[in-house]
Amino acid sequence: MALPLKVLDGVFLLNRCHGQNCLYPLIRPLVCHPKLYSSYKRPGTPPDRIPPWKKINFSFQKGVEGIKTHFGLLGKEMTDHVKGPEGRPLMDYMLEQVRVAWEFRSEEDLKKWVISSDVEIGGKSEVYLKLGRNNQSAVLYGNLDTTVPQDGETKYSGYCSMRSKPRLVAFNRKSPYDWTSFNSLFLRVRGDGRPWMINIYTDPYFSHHRDDLYHYFMFTRGGPYWEEIRIPFSKFIFSTRGRVQDNQHELWLDKISTLGFTLGDKIDGPFQLEIDFIGLLMDRTHIEKSAYELYERNPKKQKLIS
Image 1 (tube, helix red, strand yellow):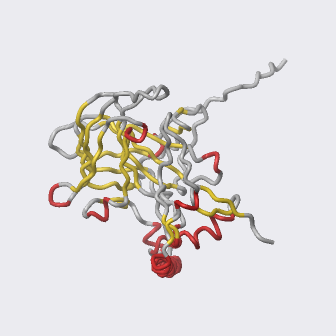
Image 2 (image 1 turned 180 degrees about the horizontal axis):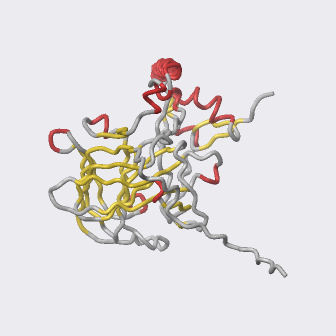
Image 3 (image 1 turned 120 degrees about the vertical axis):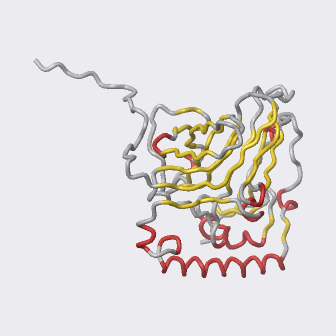
């Protein structure tokens, strides 16, 4: 029995989970689609009347090259699976105490990240990303502008962000990070005194969890000196669609999708954040599971014992 197809944003998808797991990863190398991260549409803009099939950029030559590349990645993925977790011996993986998740030493390292600002909603903030001195760090800089766009609907503006791209394996399948061997995030940064919000996105099992976010604030002290910041994962706050939830729970360390930095302190002016590396740390002295007390929202009345 043939599976039903539907067209969504110019890409053929199978209904429900079939397209994501079966057909779509096979034809994705043949299709080049520009919308990868954001499909925001400003209020008041005219509707897009271009038919979806006219937005598809099909290239047979690039498709064949892409398939060859993905089959090579599939072979490497199978080989790493035989060696052990993430392609390393099991003993080394279990005894690992520190790991560098991201470092910035070349342009290829910068391509693993995406920068964005309120320009996407009509704002005027500017953000840029470049390599630091001697190619030993990444410099995130720009100008924050809290001017609200005059579209009649937007009420707030003024943010800049930097977010890592999801890790993809063969045929552009998402492969979340597994950080269960660690309990703290470790960074070496040099800021200008502004507070940054660190955001961790997970790859949940269900679609209604896609707006879940874990975040915590990183306060930079400014000045010419580097600072090493350690943030336990138990300190991260759980929120959904920007609202902190009463029902807090631990971070899903085995389903880490991306990590990002956001600046939105409502102060107009230039900013700069220099990052040496982003790593993971296992602190044996830290045994806290969650830093926040959990309350029962509707507690039952206790019966008095006569």
